[in-house]
Length: 248
Image (cartoon, rainbow, N blue to C red; front, side, top):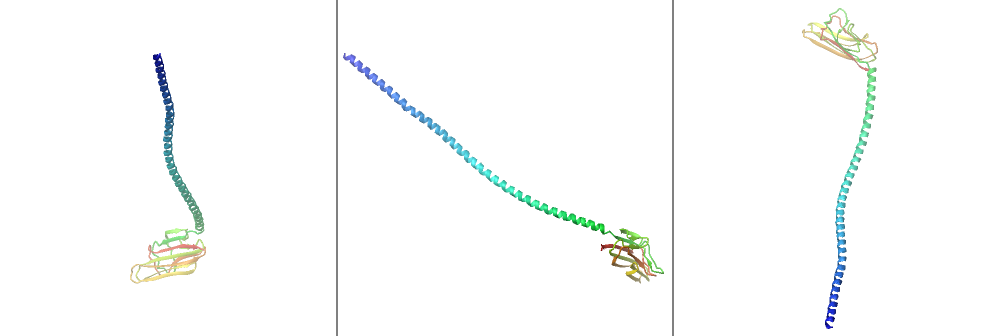
């Protein structure tokens, strides 16, 4: 009976040990469960922390890009304002140029009108041979034409006829080359004496006599050069010229 009782007690002890072991395992398992959940939470928090750090880095980069973009936009706005100002200045300059061009065109038209109303008159002619001495005063015919704009000078008669009312200038140069000979010339407007010059050649060397006059002429007035009686004028170096200064 004692052995059976001992066996029962041993069995009870064994059962108690097994029960304690199971209890410890259960408690250990229960203790491990919160540790696994905590680890998962920690992993999630680490991943979120890493993601947050990456997002902060990206935000800093974006802020830097945004700042650079703002600077670029501000620069473009400034440049746009400068372009607008330059455009306005160019418009003003263009407007001024247009105004000046219109004024210039007006002046050109006025000049054209004046030129159309202001005939061009100018002539210059020379002798083709010596003239004189003669027994009477005579018209000198400068028959070799150098210039005859407007055709107011007649090389056949030696007469200049004013085509318009205005102020004219006439000039002469004559050559003297014969020793002991007088040379002289004078200009007449219609029948009125204008100016003249003469010289005595005492040594036989060539000498030149020049003169000129400014005169008002009416349309149709005649101006011509004349030689004095018994005077002589040499050929090619003697000239007679005139031109219109202005119409009035």
